[in-house]
Length: 219
Image (cartoon, rainbow, N blue to C red; front, side):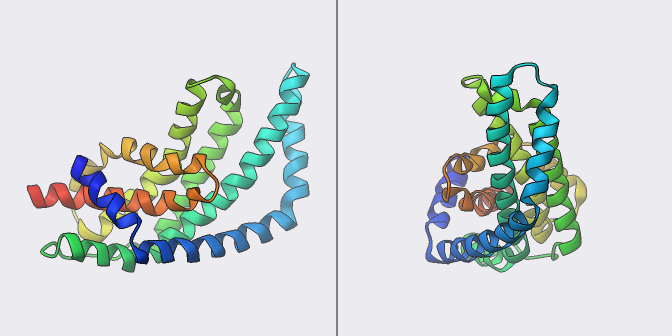
């Protein structure tokens, strides 16, 4: 596992990855900004109505501020995830050829399925966040809870995007995916720092790449 992290950190600071992150960040900011501009009033009204069931006024106010910020932040994060998923294939193949030249590319992920998995993960994230957002006010537990939620955004879409490039057998891909929750949570640490959250999806993909291909090569 230490080799996985070593190679991943080497890759994340390469010129190719930094340029990729910059482009994805600009696309995501523009797209999320347009969406928020046209829908923010409706989103804010829904949040205020939703929090009406909470008996504590201080939590209603704090909760509204937290959820409003979180929704905007998640929208931006989702855009980063979508664009990373759409455009990362060539970069992943280049990194794979660099580290694992004997492992061939066997397929191309379906854009439609990749998009569906990303939107599904985003919907689950938002649902769980809205239901259990009060947990984030609990020290330590709240931070672990957030990491788990963010890992939902990354894990399944990333496993599909990366795994499909190199593995055709669904059982093999499922087996390799069993240990990826922790990797997704580690990549999610970037989400705690604005701007660095741009690196979370691609870092997750790079971690998964080395986890999947490194163990394949060892085998």
